[in-house]
Image 1: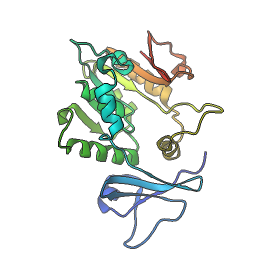
Image 2: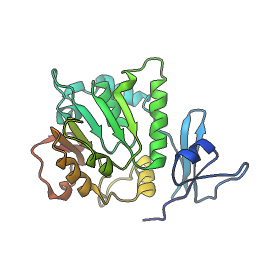
Image 3: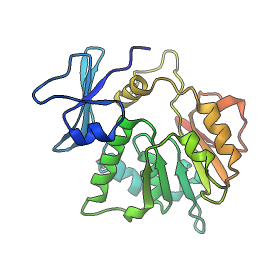
Length: 246
């Protein structure tokens, strides 16, 4: 695994908010191996280089792709909704313990769930917080703003303080395991890997989630991946490329 990149910013507010993000002096620039996180006209953006290729990353919950999936993705009949337990008379309260880019939190909120979305990494949280802020400022907001609550915290510590009645469902989408001879990993996943490294506490996270005794714990996995920690689920909901272990 390559050395984790250093992340700089020109924004005093971001530097103060985000642990590990270094404030740049006025007029100074980052080196070719460092990454830059800044507030731009379109939103908070991370820029840098991977394998000699420049990239920029900004989370967007207002994209045409997200709107299309919300409107035409199958609603409560799609695999995610089935795994969570969404029914005509049941709209669970969900803890998304690995929020990342916020896509599942967005979709579940659009389906009526109240979602608390946790992201522990400060840079990813900054990108997520900005995306949700822009979503809430949209002229045609697809759902009330109180449907999503963001938390910048370690999920294991957060879940350890929960009671079984706090949430109906705990949803986990840990970093996918590497697959030999796999196609090129998407840009955002490569950025995540470099920032975070491998998920080495996914077994602990699952065990802590199960200890809460909520109605369900749902784990998203690629179809090729083994069960986390060898824990066999009660049942599974499958999609084309992924499955949900329940």
